[in-house]
Length: 232
Image 1: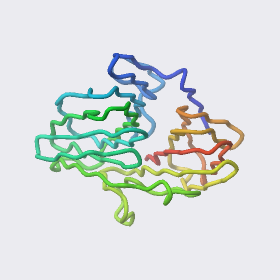
Image 2: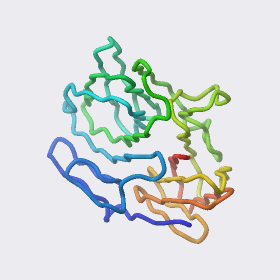
Image 3: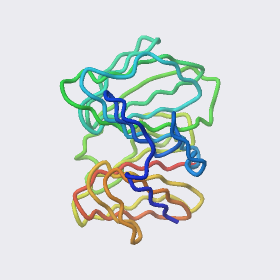
């Protein structure tokens, strides 16, 4: 099953400094049919103007993955962590028992991110933050695991949930496969380009909610950058 969620149908608000689109119910956008997809709770498509951002605010009991599409985001938290995550890199914050952080675009250009929230399957643990580069060349023609709740994904950032965040860069005409499993749910968004899955065309920034698929086959119609969450 593939449910296409065109970009034009997403909820969201334009705050001037922030143009936010929501694949799932979030903030002032509420759609009872788009509350979550398995343990995937939030997928926000944020465009942040230069020298602006999110001031310090708290989180707890959530795994928050930030995929930077262009520009860079600078994180700072009450644990003393501070870091700049540029395009192509990924950051993960495990909110755990509680963390307060800020996220700013300190660049002179617009920053675009996907922010993905997953419900944790482990609770009561200390909060943490980390970031890592994932060169797009290493994802060429194949899915690479960016963040994972599984010990055998050694090169991925660690998250405390039964899920993976993966990505691929595909040239037009290329096909990449991902072994999903018929009992799993996937949510896929092309950051750029246009792809096809089982006869369904998914344009840049559209969402595709996928289930009951053992092996997911993604074919690029145009050069594409694809991000996917494999959720329980």
